[in-house]
Amino acid sequence: MPHRFDFLVLGGGVAGLSFALEAAQHGTVAVLTKRERGEGNTAYAQGGIAGVLAPTDTFDAHIEDTLVAGAGLCHRDAVEVTVREGPERLRQLVALGAEFDRRVGGEFDLTREGGHSARRVIHAGDITGREVQRAMLAACDEHPNITFFQNTAAIDLMLDRKPHSPSASRCVGVYALLEDGAIERFLSKVTVLATGGAGKVYLYTSNPDVATGDGVAMAYRAGARVANMEFYQFHPTCLFHPEAKSFLISEALRGEGGKLRLKDGQAFMERYHPMRDLAPRDVVARAIDAELKRTGNDCVYLDMTHLGRAYVTERFPNIYATCKAFNIDMAVQPIPVVPAAHYQCGGVVTDLHGRTNVPGLYAIGEVSSTGLHGANRLASNSLLEGLVFGHRAVKVAAEEIASLTHSREEPPAWDSGSAVDSDERVVVAHNWDEIRRLMWNYVGIVRTDKRLMRARRRLELLREEIRDYYWRFKVTRDVIELRNIAEVAHLIVDCASRRKESRGLHYTLDYPHTDEHQGTRDTVLSREL
Image (cartoon, rainbow, N blue to C red; front, side):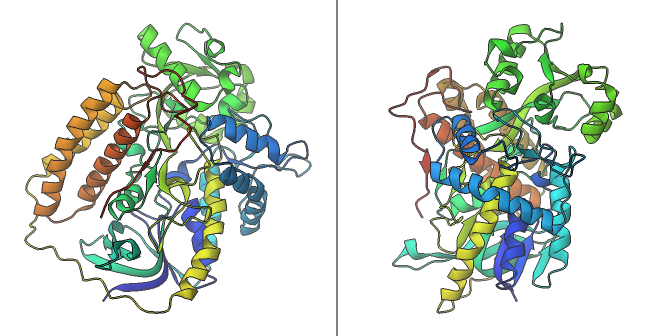
């Protein structure tokens, strides 16, 4: 028998938990997480959450900073909604029990990050995401209407297709792979994608292993519109060490006075942007990439030594401890850093309430394309977006399920057909590695038409191999993730090939300038069903 719930949430990060906590007031909620709950991008967010909380700050300033970073592609209505509703969502988070750093007088200790014109980033040391998730999970545990299903990987969305009107097909849940290998149906009146990003599409990423683009891939296969996948944000500073697995060095270090330097100690950001080390992330990432190519060095260095041991150990205890574990004492040594894939600025197209073009399907958080980020996300706007749109989606989703007047035909159980256990798992490992390497080399920080063409050709062959493997052998989590990163890689290349200009995070040597007449439109893709 299938599992039945009013609301089905895929993903347990800030967006999914925000939705689940409020939706539980209107019905039963299932939260599916691919690994243990809490394992996702939210838990690894270090810097903080942007919000207008200081009396000297203004909504207009935060809106303008976001629009400038977005390089002409932000949707102003999405920016205004997020910025103006943000402070209330932050107060709600504090009411749930989240504890943020405060000054002696009790006011929030606000920091500043790249692209911001004021100190407006609320934080919990350098483990903000972990603290936010702790508080939200604790609140979920107190609600009887919320049920977690851990180690449960969604395979595909289930659609109630109407033979004479495919556009009226409604999402009614998902097929999901359980930890014991069984594949079960999770039926729902509303399905919410909160699956995060797709950093594992690239060889080097700050993201955890779960970030394989599952939500975007499933939504696209189900006919949802996807937009602006060419804008993948590369965080400028990840720890460069052979034994460190993509550990992020927060932008807050530069916000507090950190300086980027070459191996010989020379500062270089003044050659690239008037804001120097506080320039937007796309500028800093390209600057580092250019310096590495120019000098032939493996990394650049982030220098905090002038700030003193007492300050760096108190302000950045987690980063300090992690670097120290790799024999790097950031109080007296510059930190070796390189860029890495960090944040997906495009995604599944939604309205201002998280609704997609597929009835019954919502998308919130990093998986979505609300119009907030445009061509480049402003630092610390991501957790903010998850909070705001998780809240906004609940009201219309609750109204939607209340208006459903008839039951839909129950989708059939999963049929494995003649699929057998695989004896060729080397195919999965090889294809996984090849996709990530070709994306890093051909569709990375700097692109060309020739590189994109090469990537497209290789991906066509790889996707054919993966499709054959998917249908011949029984489904495993590795195969699900491989299939999804191949789909997302294809979408990134397709979007990048269509944008004949450089804008924000998409920089191509063939079209190095922005095209104000042709370029200020979203790149939208949809799959005909």
